[in-house]
Structure formats: structure tokens, C-alpha cells
Amino acid sequence: MVTSQESTMDDSVSILQDSVTAQETLSCIIIDDEPIARRGLALLAARHPVLSLKAMFSGPEEALTWLESNSIDLVFLDIEMPGMKGTDFAKRLPANTMVVFTTAYSEYAAGSYDLDAVDYLLKPFDTARFDRAVRKAMSRRAALRPYQFASSPTITLRADRKFVNIDSADIIFIEGVKDYVRIHTISERIISRITIKSLLGLLPAGQFIRIHKSYVVNILYIKAYDNSRVILQPDNNVSKKIVLPVGAAFRSELEKLHSYQ
Image 1 (tube, rainbow, N blue to C red):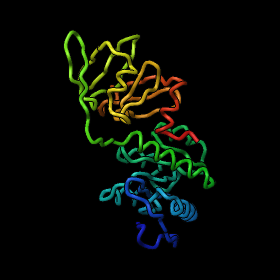
Image 2: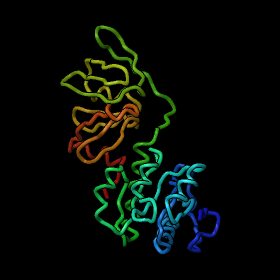
Image 3: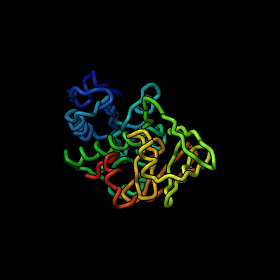
Image 4: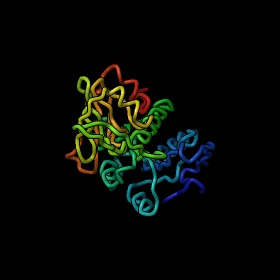
């Protein structure tokens, strides 16, 4: 049975959401075949200021039907359920829908990260652990969602004995080599005699971050990241993924996008 935020939940939980703006909110659903587990998650979601619980389901099949006409940001998903497993359900979600697995079975942990899950909550978990998962989801949305900038400024650089106009939105990453840079764009590679620090000063603030003494990346193209590397993906072609190292001195830049706590 599908139940919405505005109606009485199947566990008779009244969801009282805090007042938050749309851009600060993660819409979510809960899928778990255990009523007690659904009720507990609903209570945790209700008290969290950035979560907007839209529905709860006792199985994946119901959720798939609901998702045909609705979209959400995040799914709190059990794994062991009658019929379809949560891991199989996750494979059928849109690419921009995040998943936090909630299960009593620790053996599924490794496989969950192969599915690009935001987090893996091993039952029973407390409020602090739940909040950590939500922070991870917020950080991922901030880093990986399509960013909308007021403009994409064009910069002009001297390259190959001529001046070249470069749309900053087309820059995937910048590679610094001594006193010149290689600018990798979606269509070409441009070499210019300028330091990476000077070039950063020309680019729109907030759109580029320095992850290494030799690399600056455009956050528009970040697919995933951790303490040691950043994965860039210029388009939907998985074979075109670019993996760059993260320098220890620049990890604080990534911390602006991701909470490690």
C-alpha cells in the first residue's frame, strides 16, 4: 500500500516536517517489509530538517509503480524482502536517485558500494548514524547534481601563437606542468603558458576546485570521489571516465563538498 506524507502512514506515524526551503530538501521514500523498521525510519526522517518523506512501501513492486509517476532524491532501502531484493530494485532506479541501504545483514555491504550506494546502515542503527547517512546524501547531491550557474564565462588565453576563447563550462579539468597548463575540454586539449594559480583566478568562483598541486577540476563533471581520487565523467559513456589523484594538502577543498564525519 502506498502512503503519502499528507496521509496517515501504514504504521500510523504522523510525519511532521520542519520548515525548509525546496533547495535544502531531499525528497525520500522508505521501502522495508518490516512495519517496525518502516516506523522507526519514518520517525527519524520526520525529525530531520532536510528530509521530506513522500511515501513508504512494504515491497519494491509497489514502489516501482509509484515511481512511474513520481520522482525522489533518496531511497532508504531494505535488502532482504519477499519477491524482489533491494539490490535488484536499486539497479532499476534512475541514475540520479540515491540509495541508502538499511539491512540487518552485514554480508551485503561490499555489494552495496558496487551499486554506488550513498551509505549502508546496519540494523539496528541510532540517530547519529542515520544523520551521517543523510549528510553523505546531501554532500553527494551538492557535488554531483547538475549545477546551474548564472553564466558560464568565457576566458581568453594565448595558445599556439594565437588567442583562444574557452567556455569555462566546457573545461573538464586543468593540468599544471611547471609554468604552463594543459586545459582538457569536452572537445580538445589546449596548452597555454600560464600558471595554474593564475588561471584559477580567471575562472568562475565555486565552479572549479583544486584537488592536487597539478590538477583543477570542474565540479560539473565530478562523478565520484574519496580521500585519494576524483572520478570525472564528461558524458554518459562509462569508458570515458577520468581518474585523478587527490593531494593531501588539497583534501580540505573536497571537504567543502563532502562530509567525512
